[in-house]
Image 1 (cartoon, rainbow, N blue to C red):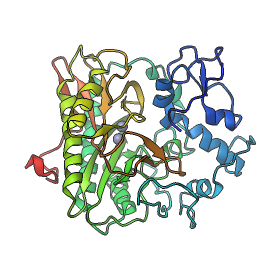
Image 2: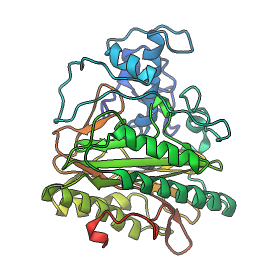
Image 3: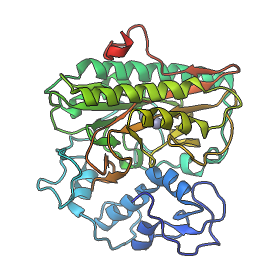
Image 4: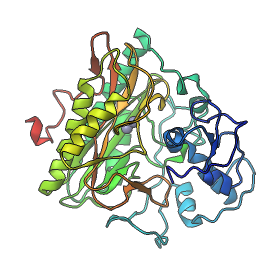
Length: 402
Ligand SMILES: [Zn+2]
Ligand SMILES: [Zn+2]
């Protein structure tokens, strides 16, 4: 539904993303008869930018209808209740798949029970009820924070842990392992390091990392499907530790992968590399999308528009918004002390995305494969520090690095 804002006039409202006067209203909120506050946006760009967090409003309303919400409100909805029920329980998705025009050959599998974090682990404010409270209301959704040296030092520590957690996941990837077993590795490695897996219960996300296979662009939910020889799988890890988040992802090869997919994954790695290379004080955020788009286009690939990089720190997602596509409208220039992610999603076919009925899994509209790489970055006085950089101990899984 990203990109489908209606033009109902709501000019007295302010944009839920940037605070400017809002003239668009989320059509899903209209359909669900949800309050207009928080459902209004100034532009399609702001609507798209806020989508990954905004959509939880819809899910919460639906869960309420199913008697699982905590507000007691009643809303009518026509969406597939069995799927939502299964997400709510954090267990199997519907035993019988809903009617859906599946883009490719991948299908959802059962989801295991929500994993537990021990009491001594410091939790973000969504851990218990699935709803971030500080993040959506923070000024840092509009203002790009300049981190203090003390905050930067905590970011370094957390990002290093996140890197080690992703490396642990990379070491177990092989044909036959389920994405749920990868999630278990991520969960256990994170809590062993004293951290909390940030995605767990973030806007009700049911697992501790995202695993995105083949045509899945991002936000795939780890489930009982066994990885097959020839698959590609992205594992996206975010760790919360000492009050800050560190976020990275890589796309891995499962067994023997065809030449076209290997080219896609390598090109995506290079897109991130080239984007990082231009990061320094004074560079416009919108330039990142130009660099990525140019390289992807040269290889005959396309760039996903609905999901962007983001500011990060004490908040999981905040300003700046970092589009990866050309001719984007991102505002502002980079300054020393800012931390944000770049995480291009590159498609073998067309750029358009679709959402599975689980409300999370974003797939390519044409069913062709998609790859992604992500780092958390710090702008320094002279350039950039890659806070989630590979370590000497990182497994050598990418042929072009050896
Ligand atoms: Zn990530
Ligand atoms: Zn991210």
